[in-house]
Image (cartoon, rainbow over all chains, first blue to last red; front, side, top):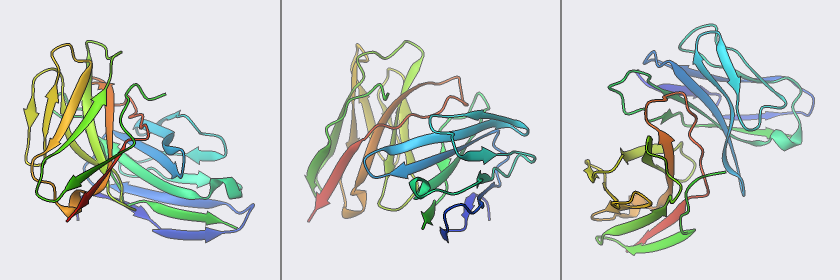
Length: 115
Length: 112
């Protein structure tokens, strides 16, 4: 089905473990984004990507790694998870064509708990 | 920091119009006003955007003042399902990769 999907929906991991959150979109949107959402902080941008093999840091990139080898996928990796990374993670994508409204489409989120 | 100011919360009776204000006094000439909403536990959802003219779509209307320093999102007939956090965001329109910066938004509670 067309859309943007995140997996897993829920994940519990231990401190120090590596964990990867997946994001897949079927529209061939150029831009993709990762946000985290915590109580009291709202949505904060972690990383974003303008195209395959082009990524850039957002507001809170420390502790995260991203890659974009294919346009449709934008995985987010926590190399050594910490409890402060317990959060809800949202992936989003956006078109780049001039006729587009440049609105973002968000996935349903991944709720990550680090114990 | 977000370049918009919104009231933290508002209440609305079901069936009535919900008018959500937003101040963006430092908006630049090339920046559009975007509105998103986030229903509990879901990802944010695009509602509408505009530059200086009033806009309407199937979800809502957007009224932007002539000086563009403020705007109002109008949900003409609010339902219980419109209960959500509403975000007003300003961003250059011709920069698709410019990240959306979310503030704290307005929590709209619609009650019967």
